[in-house]
Image 1: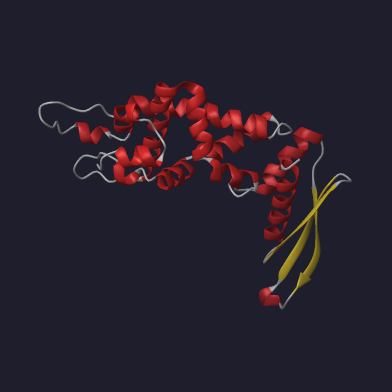
Image 2: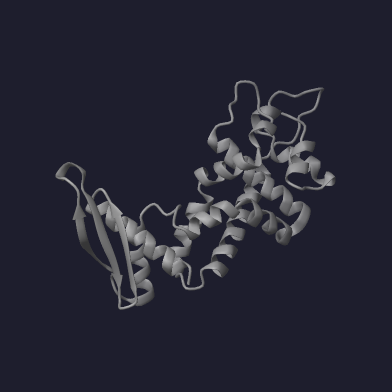
Length: 226
């Protein structure tokens, strides 16, 4: 584990938060090998706390950012933002991996890295309260928030938009193929997404399904931006 001073500076944290940050980055495997007669505190309790704080902060963001999105869709968006792969990406951008304290033979696998990020959020909640922790979450997750706004973290746009349309407008969107171009072995399809009289978007792909997904993603971007 590298000294956390550089991390404190990079993340613009306070010197007085050093011990909490160090604990947040200490895996339980490290404490299984006492050093100099004492075992350092590990991050499991902080991870438990940070998990709840992170979910609340992300819920807070989505609630205010997307006032037109119903509860079920907000829940799915939140799940994409707090899933392990997203947390690992954020932790990587923050440079947490090189500062982890791990026991001999323990590797910084994705789950450990994700837990460390949650523990860090928990540590800063203790230090700064919810408002301060939320501010840092918003800063650290800004790229992920931008991706969710553009639909880059939504795995199935057609399903999302179908459920959204049914809950919001009590109707189902429609699709039609506008064109097929190219030879049989390398066709490009263009599909149109239609929702009522106002929402019409198009998308292209190498299959009809791919084109419809892209059209649904464009509709997602349009509606989420309103």
